[in-house]
Image (cartoon, rainbow, N blue to C red):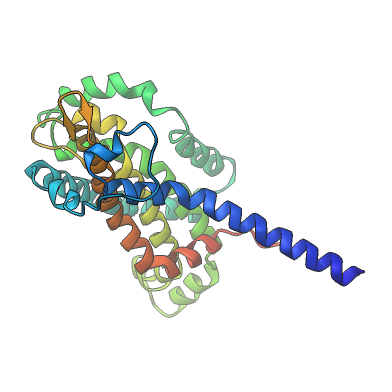
Length: 279
């Protein structure tokens, strides 16, 4: 009786997982087939769940506009530069909080840094526009987006790196000091390799935010700089949105973060396990 109950639970669990998987993957599937449909088919009142006429030329059509490739490159440059800067500053700040600022002062300062990531971005939208508009480089520049994204990525990077450094054993640093290492050398030779998987996790989170961000990019970009989320609404013909080109371009824009995750997934898993509280 018990064995049959366990078998029934397993069957129900598998059924639930299959249904959940289909429910989760269906939007991605519909995006793929929509990117292969002609315009006439995507405008039908009753949608088709498999293209009656395959049109793989949609992927070539999205790059007929030179702005498409440029928007991908702009996003890649902004996201990469912001990620490197957030990781560099967040690592130094996180180490300082974990090693030198402890007690109520350190805890309150760390929470204040993280609280800057909690407020809604739309609350500072207009003030940020006037602030960057008053700078020498203006709003339509790479530097504006990189610095603005730093406001949101740096608190997250600092907080996570602080947790990772606290999880790293301090005894190894002290042993390095006894071997004649300077604090600077011990940091780079001993401590930093211990939290390297955590750094990869932080870098991926910062990159994904900067890669997908639309609100501030739509406000601060123009003719010189235009990231891919801002470029997506340009796939129109008159008053009609070309959803097949939108879906094709969105799939192409998914490739950089997906490839990065595939290449670094083992570091991602190890990095996320660094901050687990040990009982």
